[in-house]
Image (cartoon, rainbow, N blue to C red; front, side):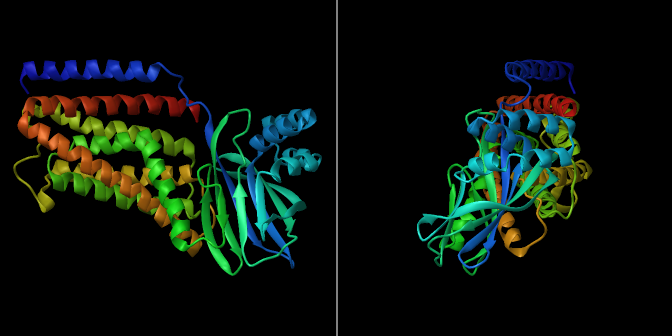
Length: 404
């Protein structure tokens, strides 16, 4: 590569890196607040009764219930038990404050029948478990319905509360009631579910969640931009996107249904590293080959890819496997395999793919047009994208290694 071109590439790297470091360094290392996941299994109980098995994050339940009911003893004892990491102590604290827990949960998670809210009571013993590296408590509610009917409505507004630490909550609902079985996803925009809802309405909720996850997941979007920037021909970006889709679909389904389990301490840093690796691949070729960096060797094999092209495709597939674990973690499901849940997960995945294809359909033609009409500007734009993505991935990698 000519010396002048290498100087240009170096200047591009330094300038774009300074911009992204400044932007990311302007705020705190970690985002304010986080989203939580509530698991709810609703089924028919004795005549006129509905049984709900609720799984809630222990520390959030303690803080929120204590604050809502002004129960200082629950807050102190609950946080001490949480800090000690003793599951038996955590469960014991909640047993001593069942009235406070029920007073907090009952107005925020309701089952209605015939237009009236069923009256819940906590039944059975409390149990503790670990989900997504966090302690969860399982509560069993027996709700007596004054007007038993052929349809029930479930509403969830658990978390966030006045502490404003939790930014949002997804309630993953599974149900077997009113001769209906299936799953649904509830959140702030769609807080209720009725057994009268159609299959299309239930699936739309998961489709929307999948689309929103990719749109709000900056790391996944940057990975996709790195794929687009490193592809000059349509078949290259199509093959890369296909490899990524196949890979993350497999691990997403397996992880979400509990077949495989990989700790977030491994998944999140590797996702960040994958962003840097894919973007750096393009920068390396730009450094080596200058104006021809957007192209592969003239000798091509299957699907028009040379050895370097196939190596890139293999790397994208491997990284896609890890991204699938990240998608599953974000949805927060790790329940045992079931066909009803599987269909919902597939729809969630379709929502992800719809956004992914939309981004490719918009960004790739624009870059192609820019490369053909003004090749020099096109190289600088794609190079700047690759640098920004690469540096952002490195920053996230370091942050996630030290945070997890």
